[in-house]
Image 1 (cartoon, rainbow, N blue to C red):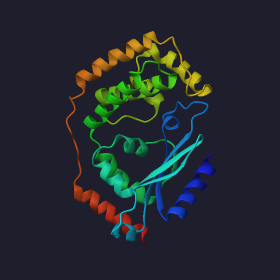
Image 2 (tube, one colour; image 1 turned 60 degrees about the vertical axis):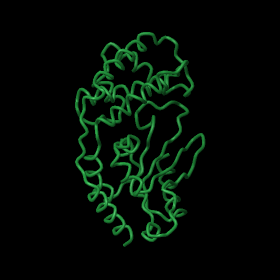
Image 3 (tube, helix red, strand yellow; image 1 turned 90 degrees about the vertical axis):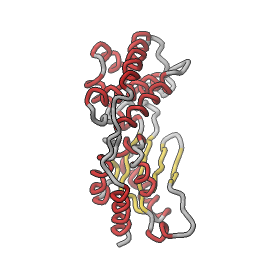
Image 4 (tube, rainbow, N blue to C red; image 1 turned 180 degrees about the vertical axis):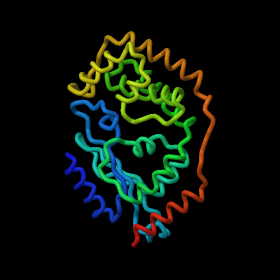
Length: 250
């Protein structure tokens, strides 16, 4: 599958006339709890030719290449990425820290310190808290919904307890932040999810429901404890953008 995805990325570069500087897996495969029928959520960051950025007519800052039962492949323009990074965009944060990397580059590696330093923990925890509510407060929840709820819940707990940005790996979050009472149950659910379809529903979740609801109350008490802490200037990002354009236009 890896080589197939690499070939698809090469086709995107050829057909769209762009340079892909970074590509990763996102979603459940990156988090470590994919189902039997999970698709491949491939995300990439690209740079256009310098004349495209100087044109009177703006090009779209998103490329949607393929969407079907197997692949979900799309990417963002570097200009969009740098603007979203300054807003601590959580989706971009997860791309940056994905453990499954299909393509990287020197340009991307040089940009990473700036991107990693700009993230505001107060914005991340609020995002993860609201995502937990969104996935958990459903009338009928699949095992997938529980994992999505637990992952974002544990991200919140990590931020509160560690005062650093959370890892992407669900296993790492679980070992560090999950109450030990529930570890065996969650490990069993991971095995079930990996061998079942996305729509699988488990009905014996009373204790887990109680735990999630208690932790949501706890997180809400600490939701606004963190102060905004950005270490960047707009000029830093502008200079990074100009450097990338110069290097890719050579």
